[in-house]
Length: 538
Image (tube, rainbow, N blue to C red; front, side, top):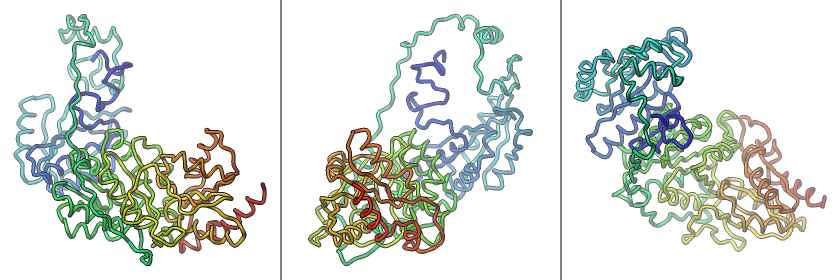
């Protein structure tokens, strides 16, 4: 512990995965009970007998995610889960009663938990409480352990300033003297005395996953990408009986297309209700336990509202497949609150995430199969509306039966000598229509489908720049989407061409997607006129 919070130490300010035995690092308060619930639920799904213990502080109990986790644990009868709360009445800024009073017993009892009160300094009482909780089969149990911060050390006892404050050297010697540990304080602890070994992870479910034969949507089939996701999910689960696949839903099963999966595998559709924070963390915990976990939600909830949860999951090396089905102005009539227009920029901040954006149902099918077999956190973003199946210039299926998705590879939808439209997702078919309009004006523009915005396809972007003009076209905040990513790459590499961005510049409204696109001059005709003017300025 002499290395605590020191440079090069595995003992950071909060526990990290680099410490042997630590499977989930803390730091973001209020998420621990969701993690424990995920671990406990995973044990039940895998028919394992272990018991999960979650240790929390009393100050964090005001967090809303904890109420979500309390109700979730009761719903799924997690009798293999015990929470222990250190009730010392203090938190970082002082007395809990002054900062935010907590009625802990009432909170847990009202949610359906069994509550045990005990003296946190009495080892025998603690043992009896833990044993009783372990034997309880009525549901989850919480132990409220009353304690005194710094008990037995007059210098720091009941002093909230020492919540996160380190003793000085002289204070440490004085305290160790009081505890009759002065001799130990003088001993020189060598760093190399402790052998550190991080356990090797077991085989991941992704490594066992067989992606199977793709579902092919013919060119006369106009469907939404979310339906293609739901179909692929069911097919993968049926084809991989040796892999435990689960789906997390937040009261949107029909909309995000996991309802069919729930009918086929009712025990594996984990319905969390309107409790996205808990759902996101439970999904990550399940994935850490070797369950192939798909968390499906609207972008406004699955990305915007749960960003902090995904950040902690990413830090903890989870392997969640985050599927967000309603994004951009394409959400339409639900209005601006539901039109997620920052899915690229937010996910780009999560350093361990891959981001995939399919352009039609066939590419969606292949991306879901790729995500199922690729370890790590993967976010697949799609729109709400039906989109046409893409074809090449000859009219043949672009994403045909033999197509396999490769992360970091962009797709040429059309070739062009006068410039290139770089686009993604549900705007791809619109970009093709733009080129059709421009062809009537004697302009030949290519269309490049940016399938993975966070991984630049350098060869394709350089080829686009060689035409002399690039226009990015997206259903995303114009300040922070593919336009910014591509523009930064061009500048960093010294690639010179005319460059412009077309994207969402103001929040949307409640209207049809086409009306919203026209309002922001993102419809095909407006974009074509914009490109003509840009081309003529050379």
